[in-house]
Amino acid sequence: MSRVLLVSLYDEFCRGPRQLLSELLQSGHDAWLLVFKLHRRKELGSDEPSAPEWQIEIQAGGGRAVLPYPFAPTDKEVGLACELMQRLRPDLVGLSVYSPQVRQAADFTRLVRQILPGVPVLWGGPHATCLPDSCLEYADYAMVGEGDTALVDLASRVGAGVSVDSVASLVWRDASGQIKRNPLAPVIDDLDSLPFPWHRYERLFYIDDDTLYENRVPENSLYARNYRIMTSRGCPFDCSYCMLSYQKEIMPECSHVRMRSVENVIAELEEEKARRGVPFFVEIEDDVFTINYNRMKAFLDLYSERIAMPYWCYTHPRYAKPEMLNLLRSHRCSFVVMGIQSGSDRIAKEIFNRHIGNAGVLEAATNIHASGLRPFYDLISNNPFETDEDRISTFHLLRSLPKPYELQLAVLNFYPNLRITRMRDEQHLPEVDHFAYRYWNSLYQLASTTEISDEMAQHLLADEGLKHAPEMLEWMAKQTYQAVRHGADEHAENISLREDIDAGIRREEALRILLHDLHMRKGFRHFIRLSDLYIRLTKKHNA
View (cartoon, rainbow, N blue to C red):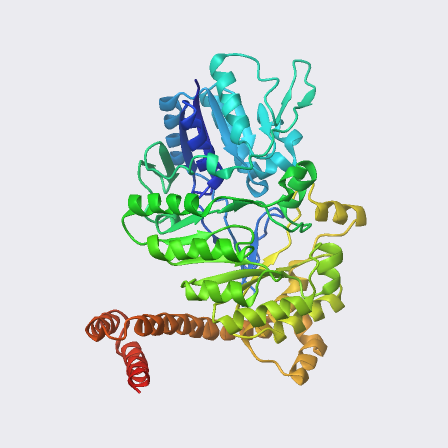
C-alpha cells in the first residue's frame, strides 16, 4: 500500500480529488488531500492585463473579474506546505490541474521535487487529459480521462515498488526519454459502485491566509456554506468549446450520460446533512439536470422529504420544458442556469456546435419565465469568429428574452486541443481586443435589464461615438443592472415568503414571529412591505 498526497489548487470543492481520495482510502491506501489556496475571485483594474488562460467574467459597467484568481502563495504558505509534506512523507503526489493553473501547478511540482526528492509526481485533471505530453515537462506521469481505477492501480504499484508501465490511462517516459501512452481505462458505468466523494474533516488540509487548516474548513470559504454534487457523469451535447467534447473524441464510451440512482444521491446528501448539522446550499452541477422527468420527480420528492435544503441546477434549451420547470418550481428550486452562449444562429451551429437556434432559446426562456423560476443565462463574448451581424443578432435576442433575468457574460477561452481551438488555429484568427468588445458587452448588459424599443436599439447600434467611447453605455448598464438585481432579490424573497404563507396559512402565530424577525433584521421599510404582503395574502385566503 502507498502513502498518497492529492493536491487541489485554488479549488476547495474539487469533486475529482475528493472522489479519488475516497477510492484510495477504500482500497487500503493511506491518503490525504491538500487544498493549496482557496477558490476566490479578483476584480481586475481597468488597465490591468489579463492572461489568455484565465476564466474572465465581464461585469455590468465594463469591469472584469477572474474566477478563480491564482493569487500567489506567500512565503509562509509555501513553508506550511513544505512542513506538511515532510510530516506526511507520501510515496506519490498527485495534482489536479486545470489549464488556467498550469504555471502554479509547475511551481508546486518544483516544490515537491525540493522537499521530497525521488517521490514521483502525477498530473491529472482536465489539462492532463487535453495535453498530457506537455505535463511531462514537469511531472513524472500524466493521467488521461477518469482516473477511478487507474490511480488506485498506480498507487498500488508505486507502494510495491514494481513497474507502472502497464497502468491504464498513464502517459510516461521510458528509460530512453520516449513518451509512452497506455490504453485508456474503461469508464465506470455503475456509478453507484463508487464511494461518495470525501467530505469528512479528517485527512483534509487547507492552506490559505498564512494558515494551515487541519480537520476543519476555513470559515471564509464558500465551501463552508455550499455543497456541490453531481448526480450523473457526462453530457448529451457536444459543444466545441467544452472539455467534455474532447473527452468524447478520445473516449467514445463517455458519449452517453451515466446516472447515479436516486437513492444513492440522496444517501450522499443525507450523510453531508448529518455531518454539517446546519443548513447549506446545494449546487447540482450535472451538465444538464433536467433530462429525465421521472427521475427528476423521484429525486425531488425524496429531496424535499429528506434533505429540504435550497438548491439550484443547470438546464438546457432542449430540456427547459414546462413540465420539468414546473416540477423544479414546486420543489422550491432557488434558480436555474441555462447556457445561451450566442444569439447568432450561425455561431451557435457552425462554431459552437450547438444545434438549437434563437427560436428554441426564446421558447425555453419563455417557459422558464412562465414557471416563475429565477433564471441566469450564460453568454460567451469576445469571440474572434463573430462578425457585427452576429453581435447584432445577439443584442436583439437578449432584448427579446422575458425579463427579469440575469446575464452571466464570459470571455471565450481557447484551451488545448479543444475543437474550437483547432478551428481558431486553422483560420489564424487574432486575439480579441477587449476594448473593442466593451461597446458590445455593454449593449448586451443593457439589453438584459432594460426594455429597449426598436427605435432606441437602432440608435444605439448606429451611434459611432458610443462605439469609440463606450463609457456612458457602461455606466448605464451598471446602473440598470444594480436596480434590476436589487428588485430580483426582493422578488425572489417575496415569492419565497408567499409560498411559506400559502403552505402554512393557519399557523398565523408562526408567521407573526417570522415577520417580527424580518423587522428586526432588515429594517422597518422591509417589514412594512412584507407585512402588507402577508395581510393581502391572508385576506385573499379568507375570502
